[in-house]
Length: 388
Image (tube, rainbow, N blue to C red; front, side, top):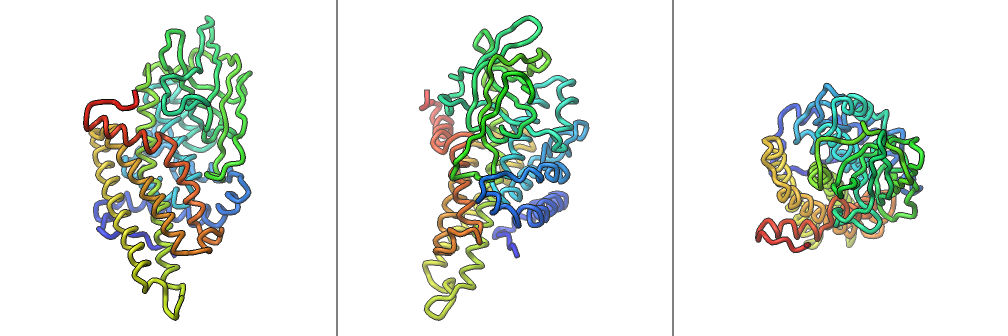
């Protein structure tokens, strides 16, 4: 049985609605994700049957207004949902993060009413799956140098280019793609499965996020209707605003992985005996567990405060960067320490720790690398950008 750590009684800062939402998602993860996820990860396949279930529990677009199929919840509710999903697996949370923050959010924030009505309800229900195209084979941390572009052909746009490391790409029905117009301005455009010249090759042979569908978005003279252009934003502000929402969700999400690893390590240390006594009685094991709990507690308080600021529309991109960087690094360290407590058993599929550790090696890189987030904080401190 899972014993979620809450050393500073953070639960008391949550509303009853928050707890009901969290507990409902937690119960779903226990019932539908945890019994099967190791098999899917071992086989390098994705449990597509869970997509509709995620729609049913409100994991897609929870902060999108009910008018468009969302739940109209606040930002702390969104964070709590991401925490519970990632406790199951980062792949499950990634699907929900992309669907919510990188596909539904830009359509809601920058799209037309027709686009919102057409796409958002089907994405919210899980009937459609979305992907987000920003990263390119040669342009990751520097999205402004992207090569993907489109031309105005009178009654349509002609899109060419490619995107790489795209979550949900192989199963996506729609993709929000960031590309340059003829003036070199970055614009968002919605591409649909079935458009001629649009393909999604699978990225295989991954050691990390093995239960997540990853691939490319390739555009070879794709004709896109003009009504698929997102009119509400120009420039990198568009994709970066989406990334802020995704990074915020990640900061909460990785707490789930950290808490699951910690709880597994605590239970194992109490049960595993060496030299005639539980290994939990030894000083070095207690040191590991004490430090893990301390870091989890700090991370919980960090995201709770950040969520409060998000609800008040006061959180800055730099504050979100700090939380994403800190919490992912914290979760990865906790996964590694937990694995050591379990010894050889920690690398087996009988326990979730090694799977979480491998997943977090991707999470520390995507949605802004660890180093880039450090430099974002550094720029905020000094006013000097170190990456230009």
